[in-house]
Amino acid sequence: MNVLVNNAAHGTRDGFDSLDGQGLDAHYFVNVRATALLSVGFAKRFSDGAGGRIVNLTSGQDLGPMPRGCGQTSRIPRKQSGRMDKRSSDSLARKIRLNFGICCWSFWFSGPGLGRFSEDDTLILRSSKYGSYRPDPEGG
Amino acid sequence: MPTAQLFAIFPDLRGRAALVTGAGRAVGIGAAICRALADQGCNVFFTYYSGGVPRDLPEASEGDYAVTLLRDLRARGVRSECPRE
Image 1 (cartoon, rainbow over the protein chains, first blue to last red):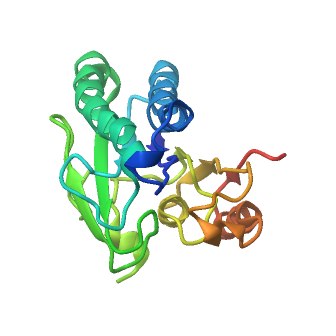
Image 2: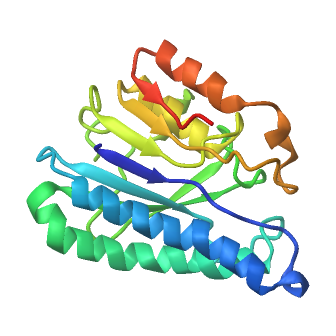
């Protein structure tokens, strides 16, 4: 396995008033725990000297409000996931990339159709300290 | 602009393998990523939500899209697998 794309996410639009333990746990299990465990498992089994990639998609709610986006319940774990990217990318880069070439990226998708992809969507990359995005054949 | 041009082009993904989580919706980002990777010759393994229809994503009720996506990716000449119930 050369590329891991952590795209799966749990989100709700029920707002702050509906915040409860069960909802928070569901967000945590999918958006934080599963993302972290998959990344760790990927890194442990990675052995291709040609390099690999971990791409984490986040909602970017720590960058600004999302008027038509998820409710408050999704913000904490997704925001935490974004913070985790910064730390894990540094850790992966220091511990693994030097040996195996794993980069860790974080993407923020923004657009009128949250969670959807279309040619009109805006793609904003928050590159990690050791990663970069160049949408051209020289990229990577 | 073709979908593949909106994604990073790696030096060479032919024959390599990718795991994409959350690729169960036809209009979803996960499925789009799967198709873009396959277009670059990358074998794609994906997961998808099978626990019912999320109330906030009514479009997820459009059927078992995983089967369709699996067929679509294989038609692009790459290996593709996903969990089967």
